[in-house]
Length: 126
Figure 1 (spheres, rainbow, N blue to C red):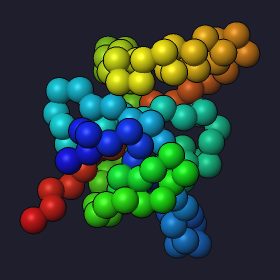
Figure 2 (figure 1 turned 30 degrees about the vertical axis):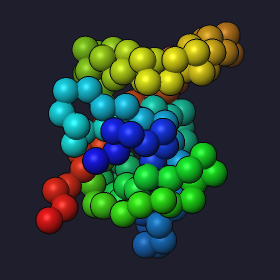
Figure 3 (figure 1 turned 120 degrees about the horizontal axis):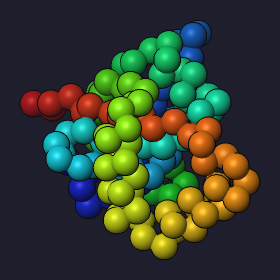
């Protein structure tokens, strides 16, 4: 569904019910219905996903403007080391030098170890 997209935006819920949309890089490996996204561990979207696993996902451009259908999804914080390794490999394969450069500066600033990998399971749309 999102294979040919460079970016997706995820809609996470605040405690007051408002939806916050955030454009992100993503990659899938194995199942095309499962996407992986990384974020700073202390980011708002991570905190919101801890509280509400029901999210929305839509293709978007680099600035976050939605360019396609919004679909429901379930999100979780991924901690399995093998899955994390495969997800980061898929992200590096998809984004190439951009991801390598981002990883380099994240390691240099010591924020790499503070990242959180997010799993997104896209619901079937009929």
